[in-house]
Amino acid sequence: MASTRDDLSLDDIHLLEDTWAEAVPYDQFALLRKEAPVFWHEHPEWKGFWAVTRYDDVRAVSRDHQTFSAELGSTFLQDHDEAQLELIRMTILNMDPPKHSRYRRLVSAGFKPRMITALLDHIQELADRIVAEVDGEDEIEFVERVAAELPLQVICELLGVPNDDRHLIFDWSNRMVGSQDPDFRVSDEDGEAAMGEIYMYCDALANDRRVNPQDDIMTALVEAEVDGDRLTQEELNMFFVTLVVAGNETTRNLISHSVLAILEHPELKAELVAGIDDDELWTTAVEEFLRWGASIHNFRRTATVDTEIAGQPIKAGDKVVIYYPAANRDPEHFENPDVFDPRRTPNDHVTFGGGGTHFCLGANLARSQIKAMVRTFLRRYPDVAPAGPHRRMRSDFVNGIKYLPVRLAG
Ligand code: HEM
Image 1 (tube, rainbow, N blue to C red):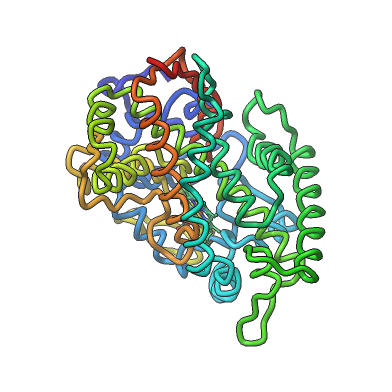
Image 2 (cartoon, rainbow, N blue to C red):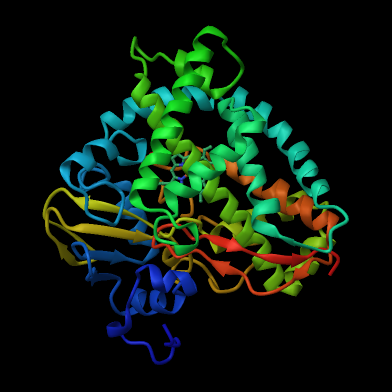
């Protein structure tokens, strides 16, 4: 899309994957928020949808699960037939209460503070090791060598997957979300095959934990019981897949976007390097990295009744798509939203969701990883510099960076 902010009109709005492959379309979002905050967007293959771009509206839709269902048509932009929907609705993101409440209660057993605290202590150690691995090299490809490693290792530890198997998880995860990007060359069939492989893996792991309980999420999940209720093996598999995808790609991309933001803003780099031991600065900087680099573009809801959003009538059954990066740059909510301010407070971005029942279960785990990884990397390589252009993933869902070459010594 060649349009610049000045010459853009509503006829140029195009929020599909070719646009995202180039850049996050902040110019389109600025126009939409101003002129058509609830905009009807056609789709070449599927039913059209309402694009919601203002902060207040994104939050309102997120918080009203009765009117805006995650289950009815799933949280994905594309249309699915009933058989596919039945399967998709077995994942937590695509359930409404009361089904969602029961499931979330059960899986939350795996996220007990004690488990997360034990893991948090360990995250710094893992980050140190990952940075040490690239020591002595001039140039590296940051995404695979650094950004991908910590989320992968953390999710494997969390689930009890042995470290040697982590590249299986990496591969499955790429194959499941990469279907719109030619570099990943995955067909729908390959994505489904990856899902089958991951199920078998999860079955074996769960069976092992039933006889050999350990201090990990998988054990907590197979033992979880709320009011006499337990997860079935199928529900467990579905949660395993969700965690692998939700916890992996998102955090990897956020770490890459954070380093990209640092490379693109020399004054920011200088401030973060000077304040490398300033924990308060790094805590607010992480929230700004999250606002800046939202790793999921959108989620979809389906209207359950005739309703309206900001005065725009919406019919029962209509698709409603909420755009997190658009909300995160809404000038009605954030002062100077296009400025990266590492000390921004308050910073109530919607990168982990708009605060409804589906609010990200791994938010604190993700925050800790971003802080540890980016800070450790910058402490070791304060002169890091770009070593060529980065490449974005072609996806209307994941804000992915697939290639980010950096020179370590500057
Ligand atoms: C920077 C990293 C991450 C981002 C940007 C992110 C973002 C999100 C978003 C936007 C949602 C949906 C919220 C809503 O619909 O209101 C979500 C849900 C979820 N996230 Fe994350 N997430 C991240 C990391 C993680 C990690 C590390 C884990 C687990 C280890 C995780 C597990 C989940 C789960 C299980 C859900 C579904 C919750 C539900 O449906 O009740 N996420 N995340």
